[in-house]
Image (cartoon, rainbow, N blue to C red; front, side, top):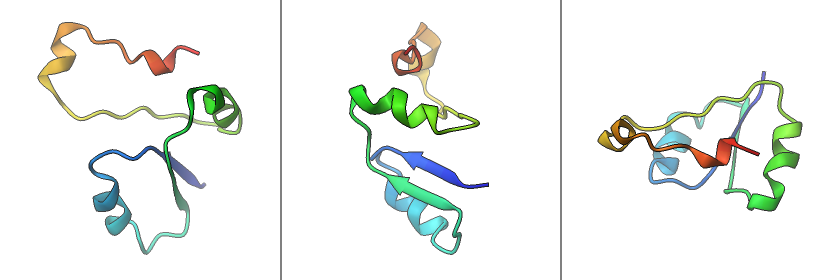
Length: 67
């Protein structure tokens, strides 16, 4: 199993440091909106993760999941 992690959030360096000894993880920069479908088509399993935040209590919708 290989993990492809997309994005450039605030925790990127922390995650890269914690996983530097693992060979089955690839970090890639954020993907342009026009390329999202192509990237998703290569994946077998998708996982969307977010930080626990009060923002989610107000019904915020992760609009990038709707393609």
